[in-house]
Length: 253
Image 1 (spheres, rainbow, N blue to C red):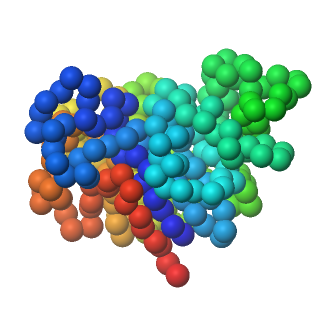
Image 2 (cartoon, rainbow, N blue to C red):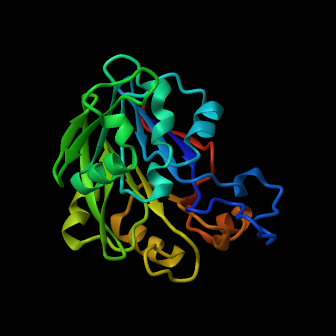
């Protein structure tokens, strides 16, 4: 499995507009964070996890030739704002998008032109599939949804093989921890050091990492308030890493 972090930032990205803090003005490219998205390559398939407003530039930078499926965690704009830019990947029968039913409905409302009975050339040809909290197949790959709470909002994380992607999480319901056993890589939200009402703080993320016990953990959805990449690295346990845009991992093989 190949994992590429296309973006590791929160909804405002880093640097933030009109901010001149040490993180937003850092010369370290790892401190420049597009909105969170991850590309997973496994068994010859490319699966995109979330498709935010920076998707176009992320794909140009990554030079990805094809996508087989897209998994959406929830309907907030920083996770679906790039769906229209999937057009180049919709050739032929269209591109499969997997999301919970309420999320699929929200996407249809935002992009009604993409879901008319008659498809017009040039429009994104998206095939929406509603999923529930049970395993399903996407592009022939088994996907396990993981229920997460984003404040009081129910969203999904996803497990693919021995990797799990948990973005925008504030709380993991007790019954979901069993889905996260035996992970090689855990990708998890850590917005900032101070507590936040709808996202894990760094401390809360570390508590969940300690309980889940993955071989390696990577922090995502970070704001400028998390601090400088070079400084965060010094504060974390050896198996926990602040991810950065463009970071590539390979599991097994």
